[in-house]
Amino acid sequence: MIDLYYWPTPNGWKLTIALEELDLPYTVKPVNIGRGEQYTPEFLAISPNNRIPALVDHDPPGGGAPLVSFESGAMLIYLAEKTGRLMPADLQGRHAVLSWLMWQMGGLGPMLGQHGHFKLYATEKIPYAIARYEQETRRLYGVLDAQLAQHRFVAGAEYSIADIAIFPWTMTHKAQGLSLDDWPQVKRWYAELRAREALQRGLAVGKEWQRSGPMDEQARRALFGGRAAVADAAASSEGAQP
Image (cartoon, rainbow, N blue to C red; front, side):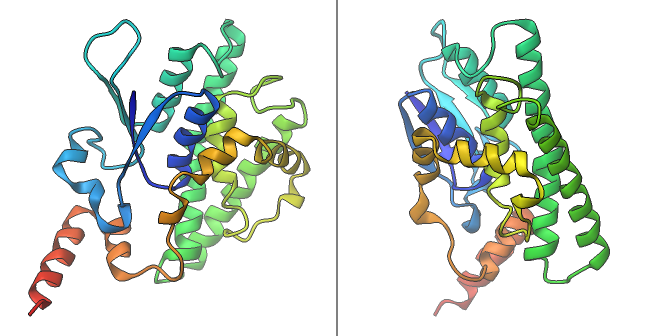
């Protein structure tokens, strides 16, 4: 059985989608990142970078001690290797999948994350930062569009963990003020993946936990202020109690 430490975010969805696609049994361990649970000692023992998702596989290949993993890209590779699925066995195909997976981890995710932060969440709107990250976001969508003009899926003819890694971040396009009409091949690919039943099941995990309405100050501190801000917020809250 796999324990998945999770909250419904683009990085979290990567793992629920993969686990659903692979038909692997798993137990969800919620980590409410809007309330600072990513900073608890118990979670940090599994994910020292205080980020979700993380997993513990109590039945790793070959037996032995449970396997612990705390980076979404590493976790996707592990699950593909564990099952022999969603990753080509040949050298060329495997390298293509890994290249696009790293592209998402090092480029698309961080840049869209920064664009979303400065455009949607930052209390001070900095035009230079918004323009800088929107330009890079659009460039990356263009890179993806050009790749998908040549292939049905991101890394070639077969659906893979590269698609699973990239898709949840493209789900943010409307919130970030982007239209997939600007990238027709991405739009075609997005629609095909969105129709997959396993992907839909993955996206539904923890849907009831998703925040609605404006972000409150406690969530802002937990997400953007770091561990010290969470501790300060907790102390202030306790001090305010009668």
